Image (tube, rainbow, N blue to C red; front, top):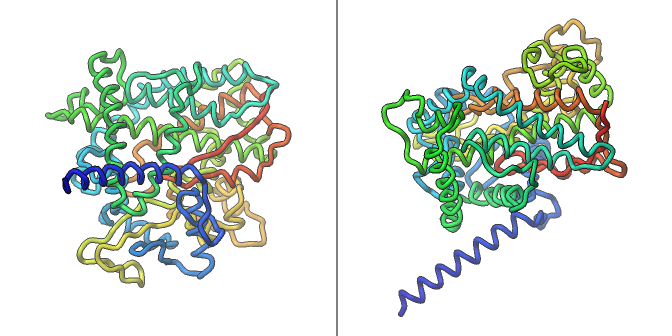
Length: 475
């Protein structure tokens, strides 16, 4: 009887704790001090930035056994080829499972093994193969937006739906048509809640044990999609083609479970990262009309009316568009609080600091990117021109010193565990902006307070953006 009661108690505890995690993650509750320091509010990046500012220190403690660094010189030693392994937060996020996506492997050898397939799947040749998928999906969402010209529309929601459509094409050869049919099953909302809830096991890894069952349910759903994709095959290579070693570069194929969770990574993290960058760039352009005018003039130069703005051939020559994207990613990178690392049994020297064994650390991207020692003047201000001046510093006429430290610019992380999808993400952002601004005039919806944007930005497992109500007019 004791064992039965114990089992029931454990089951009840797990259920109650899971409900608690989800409710906290979705509540936006502030901590007891009144500051949004609680990680489930999505304001972790601001909280840590505030600590560095408050103590005027390059290193602050952000947990019982975790340190944050605001020192660009430590990016290489901590995250480079001979840097530290990933931290225990990744164990929490995966519920200590041996079935992990690429980004969650703490073992460097296993990470390198799986990354080989990703490198092939995100290489130049593969990206050219995917371009038709991207062109179709960008064209589809632009048409859907133009159909609503003159009316208020939450463009962030439409772009999120586009992201899921495209990444489902990439990962599983297709899926629900979110742009066409809407988020009928509430998948987008469920995904955002899950990413919020993920901040708790990321911070307190042992909590991952309590949500292992829910995580496995999502893995099983992904396995059904993966199995269907294998049985269906594909007429042209998609990312799944490479992850499943269908290009025959590897002797053994990965298990269905591994390919499924990596497909899940593509649809959830991949869609969120690229789309958030598009939304943030568009927000900044609407907030700064001079920048909007300049980028639209550049688009008109390379893609005048009647030209195909979905063709990428001019992207390398569009210097102002490139500056807008770079500046957007400097201010709002995909992982604003960086990627957790951990010391081994020996500890390390980090600059003048000794970090003891088994200590979690992170280079805080948000703080490094807004540090005047790395970017000046106005490090917290959207100023795309800084990227043009960096090419010709003699053009700068300001009174404050001009500083542009590219060694401190890490929007896609750094080293062997950096974002393997960087090139794809940049292509998505540029194509979406070119296609939209060539054909449409966009402005904030009446009554929208632009200050809301920053309040709604969330630093969860990946960057989360809020609503962006606009009115679209055809040019």
